[in-house]
Amino acid sequence: MVNPKVLEIIEKIRKNIGEYCMCNCKSLCCKSGYLPIKNDEELRFIVGDERYKNREKDSFIEKTKYNGYLLKLTPENPCPKFKNNKCSIYNSKNRPKICREYPISFTKTQVIISPTCPAFENNVMKKELEELKKLGMKII
Image 1 (cartoon, rainbow, N blue to C red):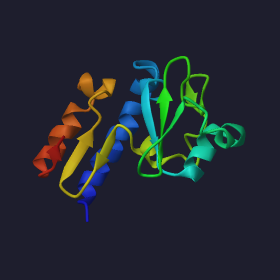
Image 2: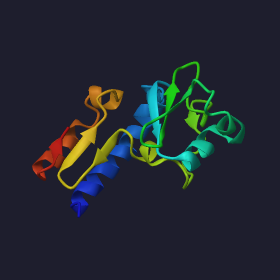
Image 3: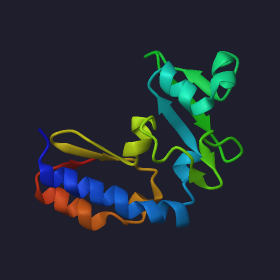
Image 4: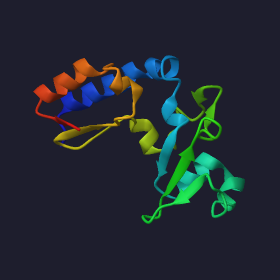
């Protein structure tokens, strides 16, 4: 089980970087790189029924060897749920886990930060990461 204090700090980081994401980096993660989707249900929710039906022919959607998908995000072709510079499914219970957790995931002993996250690159979460280290967490 993960230390409750660790969970508290991680949630604090996620909450604190929300405004930074919208104002400073302009939600880069929703517009650039790859969005891993774990299954068909998640894919259909993100891309919609029509695009889901044509997923085999869609260059935006790449099937993985683990029966998941990667959505290839670009500024010209961002996440389909990214509307008016905001996530239109932010408060949805169906929002993919990767979206809820980004840029931080964790195990019992380590915290994994996306190295491409501008908030991480600009030390926005430096204080909290130091607190996690003091609790014995390895930062990757």
